[in-house]
Image (cartoon, rainbow, N blue to C red; front, side, top):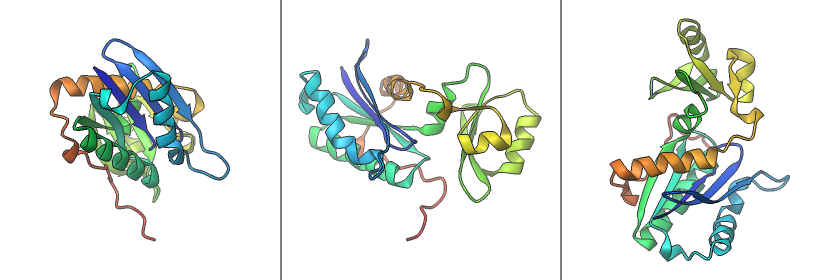
Length: 203
């Protein structure tokens, strides 16, 4: 089985090609001064497949980050995955960025990401809690024994470790979760939808 996994929702783009047994290629793409990283998604996928002498028709499944995160990135990720999976007639699986980041923790992880408007996207107890007021998040952290994973902005407010401060293999973590989900879920591409916990910004 060959799985293509990609993520354009966070501050870097991750693209991974793997089998059930091992990672074949893992690539990270950052923003440039003029372009958001998702602009390089198609070309990066093409390069990775070529590098591994793999045609799109040889893929068995696609896995992506469905958000929350950049609205542009979520749309790009989901659209490319749905189109590819439909054309190739293969499975497609979505994973929340909150679940991906929770794998960075080892002991009772709590993930809180900046949701603007004085809120944070919150995940703990292996469950997405929604967009929660930051004051409430601080109370939850104070009253629990959590390993807090967050981003640079919220780290200054709630503490914990920022995923943006190190080169974590988030694409590879995504691919591992996708592999697990493929064993337990249908993977129907038509059911692959963006995760907008809050409505997209107007305009």
